Length: 318
Image 1 (tube, rainbow, N blue to C red):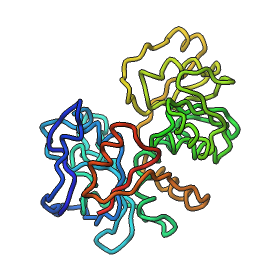
Image 2: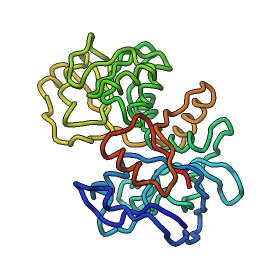
Image 3: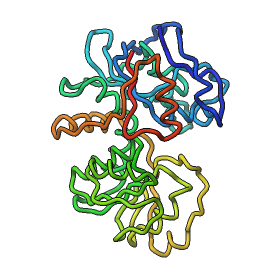
Image 4: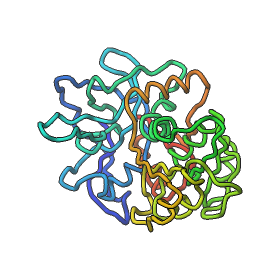
């Protein structure tokens, strides 16, 4: 089968580590099933895998990709939930991995996944739209509705204007009635954030017109101080990543004096993915897709993601 594989690790030039071409078909495994991929989407996780952060070198070669929608062995249209539970070990907390960390991922014509990781794709969603949901949009859904503890009409700040998680956060938060501020470096992307439903945007690091209840931060080091300074007393930062680095000044004095909360969030459950899918069907919300590429043109998509040259999701189709 045709697939996109991480063959080499290069932190400075991640795209150089891609191998695009034929790979063996998945081998049958008890309790697992093969999905014929109709669409898959890229995530920053794929780039960080090529940089050696999300993927260990001893696991190479590894087919990349965590998101997919396709056809299962019984002919059903399905969405893949990419969080895999590892076998339980006595005396150890449950462990999880994502597709493409331990097991081959979705950037291929076929992917092998546990049967329990499939859920029906509603006919209202295209394969391309459905393939955008399991990582970035699921992460945003879990941050907003599972971690943030907000009521409609709250004020929030989303750090970053162009990525899949930030776009999903803007769209979902605006839809349920929050006043959404967006901070970003690129003026054109800030304008597009307004199209998604943002209340107002500011350049990165600029003071907001008001303090907010919650900041959603996936950037990390470059935005952390601004996130802390933007919060009301008792407010919270919900963080799901650190694309600019994970060692900012903690700003502990402000954290304890204003009784701020720092909440971590990683992906989401299958039940949350089901609820997100239902929300999309009922409300008409759809993921913003930056571009759709053939699988063979994956390098273009990876390069755009590595350079930040996108707004929304990049989707690959076999």
